[in-house]
Length: 175
Image 1 (spheres, rainbow, N blue to C red):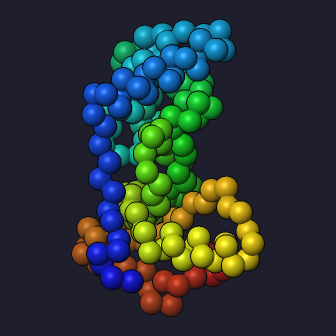
Image 2: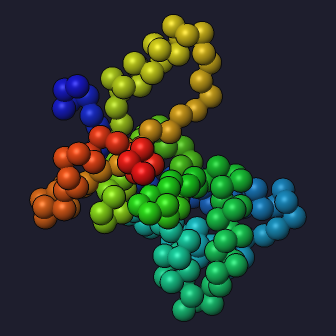
């Protein structure tokens, strides 16, 4: 696969997109008889300003000084998932991290098994192969998730590479 077919997704959110996300969340809450409290807004704003995928603990630790509790973070994450604003990505060590998903193009993830960094990528050529395979099999896909586990550029440069024998099998296949 040629390098030009791999697009590293550097998603950003402008004010218009952020305002739309706040509207979607406010409408979802209202539909369920709830309101956008100050704490829920802090959590949402923290996502909108984040430059990486966030864990529940990261959100809690960043906002606890503002009176946001763990349970509030947990419940708000659940509501943000229900209305399609955020989605979970299982990172290094099984830690669930969340990303803003609303109105973003489909992308996949490169997950570093050493430092936990999650990099977003788009592979148009791979998407075409998947679409062709599904069509040939008569399969109607609803969604897919493609995650590649390995070493990010920084960890690979620090010589954190696992042994050659373990690079092509999953942890469960080696057990």
